[in-house]
Length: 454
Ligand code: ATP
Ligand code: F6P
Image 1 (cartoon, helix red, strand yellow):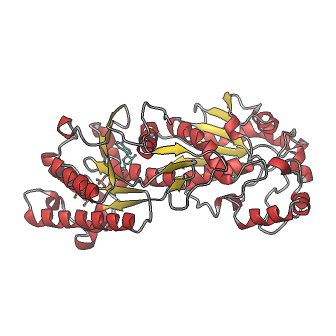
Image 2: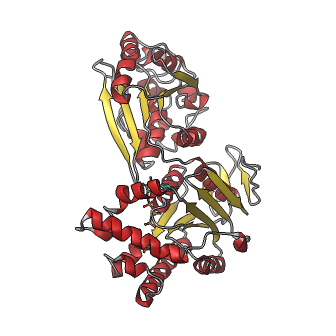
Image 3: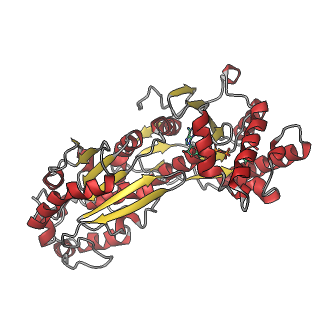
């Protein structure tokens, strides 16, 4: 199978729907068998270059795709012995500091190898500066001896203003500086960086045999070397799409539809009168939340109810088939009560495992996540986007940004006539909700219930 971005895939194959997958083979949600692939993503770079942020985002993305992943942060291991080090601790001519730092790296790598050995995941991220060739060779050899692939991810950045704002944004509040004056923390952190700079070696042609990606100035330039397989290429493609420009993503369901009013699922109904009122109110709601002069693109599904809801918004619009509501197959156009009556076993099975349950001739939440992946990729690349979509789709997109686990995401309450604003911050996503004062039925169904919408 060939993947975008010119990367080849030697040890996987796609699995047609319904084909038996051996329980002994590692699988992931994307219908792909990655046989025995275990990858250590090794972060490389000076302090305050976004390594931890990148690591955390990759883990969130992989979890969303049902790929088990975990970050091993060497700083956290170091903190057990040295909770509040000064910059001198990171001076490589300080033998005590060197010893403790190496011990922290060894503990992290040991725990990571144990984690792989116990079969607890496919991708580990070793989050540290890993700033010398010697350190990287050591990691590579240790991983090789454990049959773990390595993918080195170097973040290089020489934009002084950005580095300073990174320090102010996340480093003055780091546990390394608890209780300290922020100005002193900034000074000390800059000295810490200077100590690293004395020995820092960027990945270069001497390391031609390493699998690596170098992200220069937040992806302005990307250099890729020796990508080996499908999972690696997937991580690399994701990294290539990341940016850190301030922006928000707005999510709204369509206005109440005529199907919502009678409790039917699926279909391609028009919006109701109250749905129409929401469509008319939406530009005002958006203006209130977005502020003036902010460029915005509106994405809708290809179904009438989202297009009708977005039609008064004076922004560029794009229709995506991938944003269409979860396909409920033979149940399309039925109410929950009718489904329970006609397909009682299916109705029960869905409640037992809503994320994985696939409607006869339709989709599961897991299927939806797979078709939404290009949407997530495009969202990562984009700036301000407003998405007008459907209940299940919105739940899946929301789950990606807010790190909601699979057993919870299909059960989240997402009311009609409400605008959700998500703003990515350094290590989290901020959420604000704006409710239009226009009544609508609730389409939320609790586990075990087949009651009609209220
Ligand atoms: P340390 O080595 O001290 O742990 P770090 O490299 O892990 O530092 P982070 O803690 O992740 O750095 O820094 C987060 C900051 O970096 C955020 O303010 C974020 O906006 C910014 N950032 C994210 N990606 C990049 C990048 N590719 N280059 C530079 N800065 C980035
Ligand atoms: O300086 C930033 C930091 O994250 C420290 O908290 C941590 O001890 C160190 O980097 C880990 O990297 P290294 O392997 O270079 O010691």
